[in-house]
Image (cartoon, rainbow over all chains, first blue to last red; front, side, top):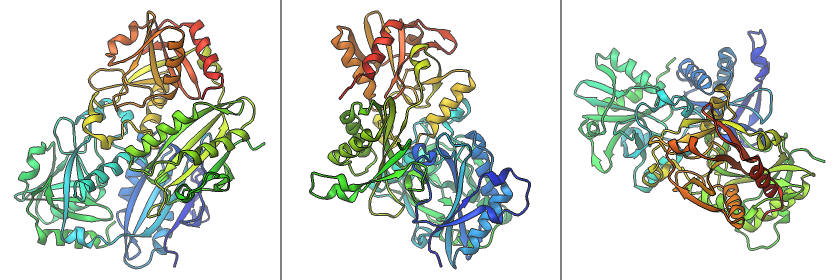
Length: 294
Length: 294
């Protein structure tokens, strides 16, 4: 079985009237040359993406991810992806994934410089083993994101609600966290509110209430966070969105970073200070997140 | 003659003791597949770059550009590029460029995901015709960058002094400028100071004094701005760096956006209000910028 592969998606086919897109994907080895140096994804980080968890060949929450991809595309003035074509590409890719956990990435680039159409592809590769993060938890540090809580409303060109390929700052924040002997980071607004992690959403538990920073355009609305909220609501818990001052963080009864591939990682320390870990609920959340979800 | 091409640079050779790197470049057609989908430049905008102007096969200010590439690499925890190897790659590329104006881009990516080394290449393509911008000038609008003037000092993970491949916001700012019927944008800090353009530096003339926003880590130190300052100093003008409140912008006696390929573009309007254009000095600056510079 191919360990890592990609499906290159023909963007022109998306403009044609058809129901069957099976001839519009080209399978390539992930290590083989597939993109030209003129790609604006590579020259400018100019495109949008999604990461989807795959468990035993079942791609999780595909439609919510495609809806967020379309939302990101609109914020970036990119053509909105053809949902049926992408659904079929993801189905083909998921069927090729082996047993266990994989990750499928969707990438929609502005295309080749001066070119007529976007470039689009889907990659698939085995997921890393996140057992330790899910069971033992993660240490996080807080890092200033430099933006105030409401900048997204007055400056949409900062693309804060879009999941763009321009992730150098997110990667630098993770390196800074590692330098501080932590596993991950939580971004803070310059006016002292909790935002999100570089590649995950934050959920706090306060008594029997769960709260996550309000996705006011300044942060991504997490697909896994939404999925966790559905589960918690069904279990009878109260869930909500709020502007969360950083001072609330160490007072939480438990906290998690949740994301599509690592799933629910309980936070053990924030800036070196311990936070309680709810092992029972964490195990329940991860069992739920590993079950087939649509 | 090849119209667009790239030289792929073997990064391993940079660690070898050698003086001649001629065997460490591979010429590829710019349109041919050359990069894998695992490239972190494309997945995360994770890398750094430079754009160098080439005039009649002479690459301009190569060493200052390589020094800034090295500075960007250090800020991003990337291996510092081997200057001699890159000098030889640029020399090969410049010799392949035809008459007239071309642009050579240097790209240093973090490499392929989970890969052992960075990926590096140099592209060359004919420059667009910027005569109208240089002679008739450009209309600009001011756009909030969302960061205060001193955020770079307290949050180096925002990579503000690095020229990274994560340029989606810069591109979105240019689209916003076009939506407002302007040609370019000037970013402002959230506390009301003038910063830089998405792909250029700003120089103001006030009487016989020239001033540019101080490169305090929050903005790039422009190679073309430095070159213009050398020329102006030699002509006997006073040049300097300052924190420039946005209110100073419409009071300037002239203003330019300067960059490596478009060169000196006089600003005709800021947010719809006219600014005087110094046509004589603009022509002199562009003649200087088009002459061979090292």
